[in-house]
Image (cartoon, rainbow, N blue to C red):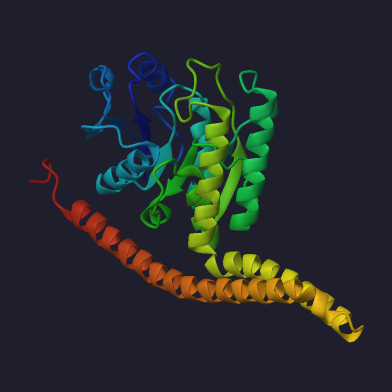
Length: 323
């Protein structure tokens, strides 16, 4: 059983060694632990720090591509290098490395395929009161969209079984954390949450420049993911609102009409007709989007089998020691 711990990095030379030193060297049930960094276009000596420390694999981007693309590139590299379990953590040592054992344990015991670390958000000193409330609200929104019970959706401290990693497919360019939970919930992948500890803050978050920017991009990611993975439900909900308002206005017009005052409320009839048409067309869009989502599911299945073939091919090659 091989575990590969991956760390996305962007100009992390000052904190990377601290994070690496905190990682476990041995876990019961794991035969081999290896380490991988994703260098997302760093302009400092992040890669040299990683190599000097003894990191086994380095995925290099010449230009910064963002956390989501870096995460997926790391997942692909881990799979190609024979990972049975993949753990993702941060280069700023936000998470306690000893808790990686808590993440992998449910996978080793075959109780889950994805395990997400639940941070003590309310007890984290460097989180402002506003950020704590937004973290809770964002997690609640993801739970509703994904029909899961994950309490800390934005947490990047998580573990994936090989099978779950092969099914991952992130399309947004902001972050992988929210979309992957919605996707996993849609695909009925077994997920579990475990409480984890956090370390004191070494640097400010680079994922967003302001709280407003964080909220805006997170909500766009959630809504976009919901539209992609639950399109019929999403568009039917919106279309239903238009239809109900149109119906209410139509009934209002009929009441006035039968009372003999219909000529003075033609505007209500026009608005009712317009809203009803909008609602009907929105539902039709939902049906079309649902068909597209079905095709997407087929493509995801094809991608899964391609990754599996790629993994089998890579790991069936004889090693240098066997030659």
